[in-house]
Amino acid sequence: MKVHVTTENGSLADKYGKQASEEYLRDGVPYVSFPISFENVPENAKSLALTLIDYDSVPVCNFAWIHWLVANIPAEVKELPENASDEKPFPFVQGNTSYASPVAGHKDPKITQQYGGPTPPDKDHDYTLVVYALDTELNLRDGYYLNEFYRAIEGHVIEEKTIAVVGRA
Image (cartoon, rainbow, N blue to C red):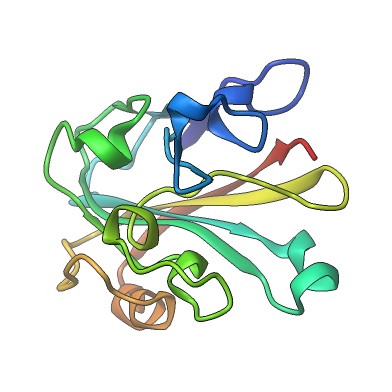
């Protein structure tokens, strides 16, 4: 399986992260998700899922920051288009991000259960995007937690692809 994210000079375009203009922010959080394309998805896949996690945040806040969780993307989908998190061009579910944490203090599900773009405070960070091809749709609803996701995919991962996406400070 191939996964592709378009970058500009090696990092995400400004509107997907910290440099986003006001029109692309929701309560200070970048909300326009970047497009992701999928190729050579296994024929027996029933759905796709993804996680976007910032492990470079550990020295800053003492935990990995979850930026986006998506499950039950139809396996025949070739691209998650720009702003899919907010516009939902086809059915899928989204889990709680770290913006749902008491540390972040957000309550709006449009922030806590959707894409929250990179905003590294100290330096450029590598954001780990993992796309999973699964042999089933997961029994998850909007607002699921990462641990629930990991339990749900046990025994159902056909293939996974990991790529690093740079978010600028």
